[in-house]
Each structure stands twice: as C-alpha cells, then as structure tokens.
Length: 116
Length: 135
Image (tube, rainbow over all chains, first blue to last red; front, top):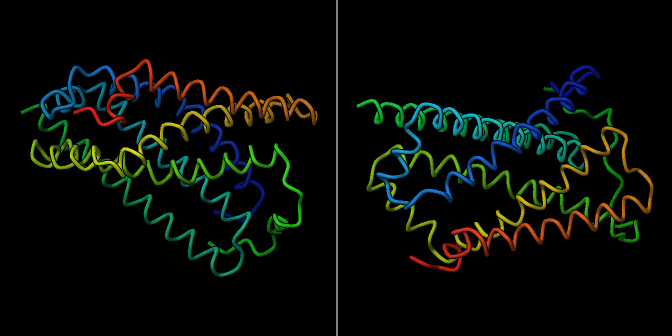
C-alpha cells in the first residue's frame, strides 16, 4: 500500500477526506455528549441506541480510527526507515483493526439492547 | 507491505534553528499522535456503554479520576489545536497562504484560536465542571 505514486496520492486525498468528515462528526459527538442531562448509563445508552445516533457514533469512530492510522503512517514515513518502519506500521494497523472490531462490536450490542 | 526504503527520511530536526512555524507544525503532529491514542479511549468508552450499567459505572469512575481528567483536558486542547492547524493545512493544500509572513500570522491565529476555543469550552459547557472534578 505504501509503494507507488498512485497509492501515495490516494492516501493524500483520503487523509483530507477523513479530516473533513471529522469536523462535523467531532462537533456532533462533543455537542451531543455535553447536552445529555446526565451521564448515567440509562441516559447515555438511551441516546446511543437510537439508530441515527448509533450510525453517527459509528461513523465518528471509523473516521477517527482511519484518520489516526493515516496520520501515524505519514509520521512513520517521515521519521522511521528500514525494517523498523514495517514493524511499527504493522503494529499500528493491527491496533487500529482491533479498535475497529471493538467499535463494531459495541455498536451492535448497543443496537440490540435498544431493540430489546 | 515493503518498507519505503527508496524514500528519503525527513532531515534531522536538530540541525535547524527552531522557528515559530516549525513549532506550530510539530505541535500538529504531536497533538495528532495524542488524539490517536485518545480515539481508543472513545472506542473503549463505547464498549463500556454497550456492556451495561456496572461496566459503565466502572468506566465513568476511571474517566473521573484525576489522571484521566488531565488526559481528557489535554485531549480537548489537542482537539482544538489539531482542528485549527488542520484547517490551515487544508488552506495550504488549496494553494492559499504560503508566504512566510502569512504562515507566521496563520500560525499565530491557530494558537490563539485553539486557546480561545479551549477556554470557551471549559467556561461555557459542562466539560469545565467535569474536568474540574465535579461529581
């Protein structure tokens, strides 16, 4: 993925797309969180189990993790060369993959609890 | 997944005299890496919400502890900084604001904007009371 000029320009464009997506999504999350009347479990799960809110929470998490990995990749390309580059990039990818899995798991559980 | 050995690494930072615009740029990367870590806090928090009242109460206690409140305050500051500095990058990407004096001025706007927005969030929203340790 890190070889060739077309993948580099795709990475460049995708990093800007996730950046732009994160502007409204982060404001949505902060505003919605700070507007909850209380931060107990019933209130918060009631908020996040609504389908549109669950979708936004998923998009926010996905854009966050993707943008995070894109940024880490750029920093690694600038400062870490050789074998260590592959090692760190692989660690970062695995962690973000795990994060995406946990995000999906959490949202499915939330939606199930909201439907029950 | 070959390492890009053909690409040059960034020149070593210590050979340069530190300039204001360099500090603004480095802080963008540092705040970004810090927010990377914090994105996993978001996922963890969401998992806690999905696991029921007990797990959520434990997680709330964890996030209310002093070390975590410091982390969250830093995350809020890093978010505002990274947002303003990121917008500056998007302007650069569209070819706007490359002059040396313009870059210094936009760097100052980034710092001032982030500081103001951070202060406003602390003073005008419930975030300030939570981070100060209110129950």
